[in-house]
Length: 327
Ligand SMILES: Nc1ncnc2c1ncn2[C@@H]1O[C@H](COP(=O)(O)OP(=O)(O)OP(=O)(O)O)[C@@H](O)[C@H]1O
Image (cartoon, rainbow, N blue to C red; front, side, top):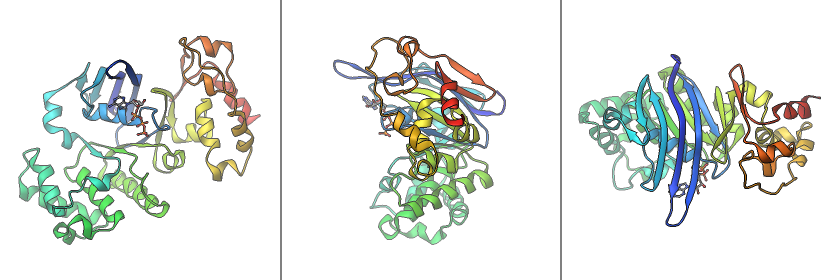
């Protein structure tokens, strides 16, 4: 679609170990709208980092990848092969804010060297790099004099901002952030999320942000993708996902937010998720073993991907969730 900067089509990633194969993500398809913020939400091991690494072309050696990725109307990856144009321009097309961002700054190098090194890796001259850095730093709340500081001279929040500046100073079209706030206290967390929104708004950079916290997704994102066990189980606008969830796992995530669940009937709903079905080895629903709404069909048949306008859900019985919340 024309208004999409990124299209991921039938993406599957497996990891090969000595005597087994581990699933990373399976047959994942979605698009990201230009100038939006999309959050990928899922618990540990759901495949968030695998998905982001596949988009960035950063998967480890033991990964096997299939499917297609289209970026800005050009194919950048098909069946594990990334285009040369993408590999040589990556940071100017899709940049990255890593998990534990602060630890990526080398303690032995001044902040200015981090900007110069990043730019020079893409054949951008030192002067251009420093000028771009000086332009970006005030926009994200940092004085340009920090270019002469070492990382140890900065607070945690300032280091986080430097890493964000490094991701955006070459003005990429898309920035991918892997759990950008998970290591931060709540006050700093909010400031960083506000900063991502400001950059999105003022510099028109599209963001794809992963998080295990649905309240972070709800605060920062326009669109939300819910990942469970390597599958997209639900995706749609923030309003659709937060106010009208259709997948039981999304409902479970929402009912687990303390401030939400203590206020309303979600607390009762959370109790329903105490049930456990035996895992069915057949090709049933990935969420079957934890689903309070599951019936025989869910243990036997992989669910269909149901689409209602822009809201998609992978479920045999999506309206059971609606009934339990709204009736
Ligand atoms: N290099 C690897 N080799 C083998 N298995 C891997 C590798 N990287 C990830 N996996 C497996 O792939 C699955 C998805 O992992 P991934 O790290 O993408 O999840 P995640 O949602 O990012 O988790 P977290 O929030 O803990 O980072 C998990 O079962 C994980 O053990």
